[in-house]
Every structure is written in C-alpha cells, then in structure tokens.
Length: 390
Image 1 (cartoon, one colour):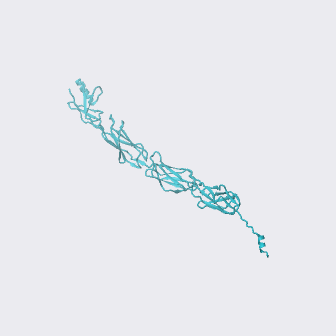
Image 2 (cartoon, one colour):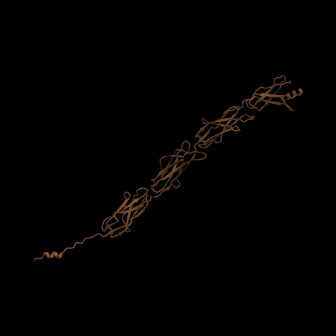
Image 3 (cartoon, one colour):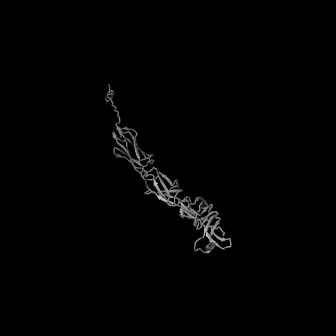
C-alpha cells in the first residue's frame, strides 16, 4: 500500500502541514529547520507508543497493515526573514569622542543559522560602510568626526542568498555636543626692560572629547586685551618687549568655536620685568691740560633695553659735582679750575625706573701741567745816563 503526503504550504520556518491524498484522512504538523531556497527532503518515521492525533492514526494503519509507514516530506525552501536593531554605546557624545553603533541582524526564533552579509550605517543622512556582520550577526561602526548636532541613525542589512534584507533605526537620535577645553599660559623668561618675552597659550580638549581646538585666543596683559591670535596646532603666541619693570599679570582666554567651548588660563605669578642693565663710558677732550685751560669730560650711558634717560654725577678727585642731565644718552662736564697735578675722574649714572645704575672711571685720569711764563727786564741805568746834561 502506498500513502502519499504533500506540503500544503512552505512557510518561513519550514513549518508544513501534511495531509493525505488517498482515502485515509490523516494529517500532521511538522516543523523542519530548513533555511534557504531548497528544495529539501526530510524523511520522518513515526514509531513507538504514545503518539496522538495524526501520528496515532498512522501508527494504527501501520499496525493493521503490518508495515512501517514512512512519511517523506519535500519542501521548497524560502528566504528567511530578518530583523535589524541598532544601539549606541554612548549617547550623547562630544566632539572627538568615539560614537559607536552596533547593528544586530537576527532571524525569528527557531532558526538554526546566523545571517551573513553586510550592514550599511546611515548617520545624519550620510552612509558609512558597508560593514560585514560577524559570526553572531553583529556589525559595528565607530566614528569620532561628528560635529555638534543631532543625528538620526539607521542600519540597513543588505540581505543574502538565504536571508532577507531588513533595517532598523536608533530609538533616540545620536546627540553630539561641544567639547570642553583647558587653556594654559607660559612665558619664555622673566625679561629685563626692553627685552622681548613671548607668552604661549596652549588650548587642549578635555576627555572624553578629543581633537585639536581651532579658533582664536585673546591675551590679556596687565588687564588690557590684546588683538586675537589664531591657534596653530592648539597653541597661540604673543611677544612683548615694552613691559615696564615690575610684575605684570598675564592671562589668555580661548574664544568658543563651533566644536569647542571657551576656557581661560593665567600665567602663574605673572611676568616679572627687571630694570635694564646699563654701561657708563667716560672720555675726555685731552689727556692733559695746562693750568687754567678748560677740559671737557663726557659720560656715555648705553643699554640693550633702549636709550637711558636721567642724570649723571661726575666725581673729580673724590668730590661729587652737580648732576648733569643726559641728552641722547650723553652728559658732559667742562672745567678750567683743576690744579696742577694728577686728577681722578668718574661718572655715575643714576638709576631710573627702567634702567639700572652704572659707573665709569676715566682711565689714566687727567693731568694738569704748569703754564709757561715769560719775564722782560728793563735797563734803568742806561736810560738815566742818556738823560744827563753834557
């Protein structure tokens, strides 16, 4: 006796309902783990006790006929449906922080195989990928280049020979905010008056943010804002050579940009400027002079910090003279009152706010010699004799 059974439907899970086409009215529901396009064959042998429904009927037929009834099922395979879900590892993030999205491609419960193929992520309207799914049906994409804003995220599974395409959307759009920053200020040195000093501001992103801030820094020197300076590789510099002696406060503030928040830093202790060093050089109009002859002494005061101003005091033989005001860095003293002999001469520049004091000594001093004289003799006797009468 031959019994023929056929599948009344080819369902996604390869769940088929079998019924006879012969005179016996028997049916059975059999779930077969078939995935793909097939066709596939599976032979089901019903034996044993405790069977119910169609199985019991088939067993009864087997007992009557004295044969074992084998059910042969032939099914046309189908492409298995899938679902794709998307999650974000961290939401919200900030500029420079990695935003990582994971798509999981799954089939309905009961499937024995894992989908294969690729997933394309769409972030804010821009496609990224494709990314291959791994052995667990998972694909991940990470990016740290997102600017501040809100980004809808979808993941589209392209499907494969055995698995249908599907897509999923991140439940809450990815939000990206500005990254906080820090700004530190350093100085090249504590200078002297007139010497250059360079202030450097370094602006950095604060974790978990990243990248290198761009934009402008404004230095404040002694409470006065300077012109904005553009950052280059996260640093900005300002050079000044006109700071007055003393301590000056220095700060820098980073101006907020599209991607980064503002920050401010200051130079610890400020910058201390010392008075500029000077040198005083003493010269004379001549190394020696005759008694009563005028001689001029000249003091030249110089400095790398600029042209000194103020006054010079000449000292002659230990006696200080009245102060002489500098003119273009020069002071002079003229005198004709020096006695005969050797004289010592020095000049002391008097310190000012910007320039330090200094002293110069006339090398070799100055010598005063006696002045030459002439004597004329008159012949008084000859004059008297010529005047007597004969």
